[in-house]
Length: 324
Length: 306
Image (cartoon, rainbow over all chains, first blue to last red):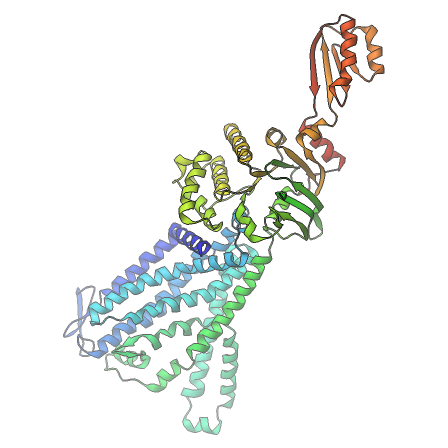
């Protein structure tokens, strides 16, 4: 355990020394403060701490749609865009040099000459690197937690689900970065590999989503029962198989919809949020929500973790067998 | 008590290149052991093999009485690598505490030991400054401190004076001597012969992955021991032929004889005294480590491979 803490403290010191860590943290905090600045009045919605106001019969204090809107902003825009794209991208760039630096001539000799196994060293270093995202998202969620209390009036600890989910997404991609970094000891190929897998995963998920919509949502019930779109179903099945081998970055982040508590109920309605965004009262379209939740969390996280385990296994095997 | 290092057989091959050609070596406890060799001879490969930093092709032997590679034993070992690099975001104290943490030294002990070790290497004043601000010699001192922090029984120093100024070298030598006085074993890898000669009890010379000479400094330098006599004025011509017959080299006022003991030089002194020749100086000449090294390396056709 002492070795684990030693490496964890070292990782925190390393992050603290990186300018990119602070830049990301400041931008995250700014985004959280902007979120905090959005509030509700009896007649509508206010922004920038009341500097701008907009009347709305739906988005106003006391209306349940206001809570859905506020948490929807958090789930779809802040977690779905800022944290799962920009913050993770910056984290990849910032954390990519950790393993090449650790394995550099003159650096690696000291840790390897200690009474700690190479596998432990590798895993602890990997876990320590995840702190970049844990800290960023943790701070962000803490601000959001207080913002929700202030603006909506409820203590909602379910917003902290973003911490493990965004960290999971980062860990899928970072496992690829680490594998290439351990193989090549270079930073650039590692970043490129991480981005490539990220892109492939995004394309794969989008492709599967479109095929699902065409197969199951665009067709009438008659078509489905008569097997009129068998070919599409086959293509969709293939895309599911393909995606089973890749990390499901977007879907993992979207799992927050199933855990966030809105109006005392666990689960967030995407269709309801869309209605609210358009200024209407929230009315959930079950087919849309079912489509968003078509894959079980077990499948989404499980298959992605298998991918991560394979990448990490290969990286750890290389690290443990390598001469330094 | 078992030896500090006992290598029965150690071989390391990189691709087609044999870095260590099945060597065997014994280092007793409580001595300063110098491993000498030109660059690329395999010195660092040997130490790294003992410390599991690289995986030997074949290895049989013991480190502090346990099989080489036994991880728990490494808690009793300190190591300063060649060209040691430390993260620039850490202070000297943090580097030493990091090393202590990896060696499983309890937190409070690590803090105390870190302070002591930094003091010992003369880095107390700089302990809380970042490594990025250190000179090469200062980094080397911090490297020494981190190697000492777990109070090792066996200390491996790979080119410890690399980049250190003359004053620092003397301090490092004193440090090594103090380690020996504490009963610890110090294994020094170096290509700087004069330094090893000053501090080592035993040495081995490594060339092309083979140990070409080994023994205590006294044993090695005793080989080829010579005695030199110097007279007031040139050695009289009448005596020269006799000296030459008995194996003395004579040149001007100087007579040199290769002999195993001082007793063999006594007849020459008697002869000179009888001839009323004033003897200005009598000296025992030992071969320097440098001479030994060059002989050993050259006889093995070393080319200084990478």
